[in-house]
Structure formats: structure tokens, C-alpha cells
Amino acid sequence: MSSLNKKFPRLLPEPIRKGMKVTELIDGAFKAYNGGRLAEACRLFEGKMLAGDGTVGMSLTGALTPAGLGIAAIVPLMKAGFVDWIISTGANLYHDLHYGLGMELFAGSPFLDDVTLRKEGVIRIYDVLFDYDVLLDTDAFVRQVIQGPEFQRSMGTDEFHYLLGRYVAEREKKLGIKETSVLSAGYRYGVPIFTSSPGDSSIGMNVAAMSLRDARLSIDVNRDVNQTAAIVYAAKSSGSTSSVFILGGGSPKNFILQTEPQIQEVMGIEERGHDYFLQCTDARPDTGGLSGATPGEAVSWGKIDPDNLPDCVVCYADSTITLPLITAYALSKVPPRKLKRLYDRRDALYEDLRTQYFKHGKIEKIEHRTDVTKPKAGRSGRSVVGKGKANGK
Ligand SMILES: NC(=O)c1ccc[n+]([C@@H]2O[C@H](COP(=O)([O-])OP(=O)(O)OC[C@H]3O[C@@H](n4cnc5c(N)ncnc54)[C@H](O)[C@@H]3O)[C@@H](O)[C@H]2O)c1
Image (cartoon, rainbow, N blue to C red; front, side, top):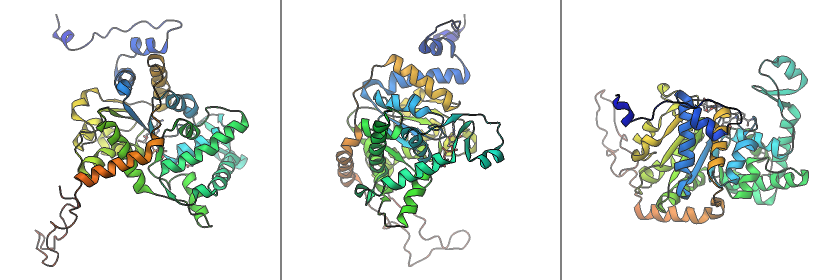
């Protein structure tokens, strides 16, 4: 008799049958490799991340909204109170606007002639197609909206997207369409939506162009860094959990994870890291890039609580497959949660973090550096001044 049965469940799948529910399919037939990881991801999300009213942050990279995943999965998750805050690439928010403004995208093919498409004024994102006019009209919408008086100042991206989302929600109403946009859902459900690289998308490009005219909108990235940390701090200091649901990787993955080092390492406030880490990606860990970095590596940075490492899941699969399945699984198992409406509490959360920082944080910036007036010789004989850590702890 094997001793394995004391440690592991027997690998015995259920035969797939007609009319099987998504939860039965995933629990019964997704048993090994990335299928096994996907089943673990579903159970982690449903059983631990959403339990006890824990706070869930989601990061979005890859071309998800062009593929329709905003309407299909992200908006339903926001509406059910399963995603409390979001970090997205600007691209996902820009392409989300097409759906919110009632524009048409088409399920094409990846095997088309791009030179012909260019001549015909067709844009291609792998197998998603749309007219060049969709870009021009979306750009025009952004430029028109940001001329409003409420945009003529500096603000965090959560506030910018909230204000933009209000206009998208108005447009949806006029068009008689509903729940088509992540931005309008963010406005409606009070889900703060940040972007980690505000200049790196067509939204940012239009904001930049308007700044050459008389627009006064500028993005306060410091507010974003502190505001995201404030959301995580509020979850953890209330005795609840903070979880990250990472789709893809990229800069939004770091932005959602760096909240913990911002609290611990930079602000000097005691904390242990996010509680649960769930990532669906195609990025490998062995190149050293952040996109493929494992939860274990994140533990070493204080980003993830070491006690929960065994629960963390990375599923190496395309988000267009994993996200709909995880969404369907969670919606089938967990009743909608009360909306946290973190956006409505943004100033209070921010002030709370500031108070804690003033209580615990140090500003020893240069005091312990080598005396700059007396350069000391290093092994190479060259000066080694100024090599001390900037934030002495
Ligand atoms: N018109 C626009 O506004 C526009 C268009 C495209 C990109 N951009 C900008 O370019 C930057 C890069 O964006 P990106 O989202 O293409 O990131 P990216 O290609 O850098 O991808 C980030 C990570 O996610 C992984 N990934 C991507 N798609 C995935 C999928 N379907 N399933 C699993 N993993 C996946 C990648 O392997 C990578 O590790 C962003 O700042 C974005 O705003 C702007």
C-alpha cells in the first residue's frame, strides 16, 4: 500500500458527460498539469480569496478587453463584488471604450493579409478585427470628454478613470446598452481602476496631445502608488485578507504587488504581505523577468505572506481560457458579495495610510552615507561615495 494516499488525493477523474456543469467539469476532469493548476486556481479564488469578505485586487495585461473579456468576465466579477480594485494596462481600458461606446469589433482570423487589411483600413489584434474609424472615434471621445472642467487638474488614475467611466455609463444609457464596459462598471460599482503606465496607451496619447493645447489634466503617479498601498493596508489592518488575481504579468503585476514593500520597506509599517496570489500567464520564471516571477520569489521581497505560499497558484495558460472558467466557477459557487465601493472611501483610506506612515516611517535619507567631503578608495581605487542605502531601516 502506497504511503502517498496519506498526503495526496487519488488521481481519479470523472468521465465527462453531456450537460455537465462547469464546476463539475473543473473539479472532476481538470486533474493534472495546467488543468490541475486551473482547478486549484478556481478553488483558491472561490474558497479563500473571496472568503471572509477579503479584498481582491485584479491586474490586467494582454489584450483582454479587445477579445470581449470585459463584458464576458471582468464586469460580472465586479458586479458580483468579486473584484474590489483593478490595475490595468491603458490598452485594456482604451479598447474597453469601444464596447462601452457601442462600436463594433469582429471575430476574424489570425491568418489574414495585413497589407490588404491596412489598405482596407482594418486593424487586427491577432484574430480580432475592427475599422480604423473605431480608433479615431474612440480618440475623439477621450479628447472631448477630458475637456470638461472636472478634468482640469492633477489627479490619480483611479479618479481619472472614475470620471471617464461616468461618461461611458451615460453613453451606454443613451445607446440602450448595459454592462458593456469595465470603465463604466468601475464608476457604477465604485471599483477603483488604476493604470501603472498612464502614458503607454492611446488614452495617455490623447491626454498628452491635449496638454499641448490648453488642457490641464495631468496624472499624479505618487497618488496612485500611495492610494494602492492604502487599499491593501486597509484590508490587512482590518484583520481581513488581501489577495491578488494576476492576469498576464507586465507592469500591472508589479504595481499590484509593490503595495506591500511600499507599506513595509518604504513606509516602515509592519506588514506580512498579500495573503493569496493567483496568476494566469504564459510568462516563464527562468528569464528573471517580473512577469514570470513565482509567488515564492515574491515572498522573498515581502510581497506575499510566507505562511500562505502553499496556497498560491500559477496557471500557465492563456487568460482567454482561464478567466471565463474561473469566473463561471466562482459565480456558480459563491453568492454575490456586498460591494466594498473602495472608490467612495479613497480619501479616508489615503489619510489613514498617511497617519500610519507619519507614526512609523523614517526619513533617514542621506545621514548615514559616507561623508561626501572625504571620498574613500574602493578596490578599484575609485571613489565609493554615496553607495549607502537610501532608506535606512
Ligand atoms: N492602443 C493602445 O492603447 C495599446 C495597444 C497595445 C498595447 N499598449 C500598451 O503596451 C503595454 C503592454 O501591454 P500588453 O498588455 O500587450 O502587455 P505585454 O505584451 O507586455 O504582456 C504582459 C505579460 O502578460 C502575458 N500575457 C499577455 N497576454 C496573455 C494571455 N492572453 N494569457 C496569458 N498571459 C498573457 C505576457 O506574456 C507578458 O508576460 C501596456 O502599457 C499597454 O497599455 C497600448
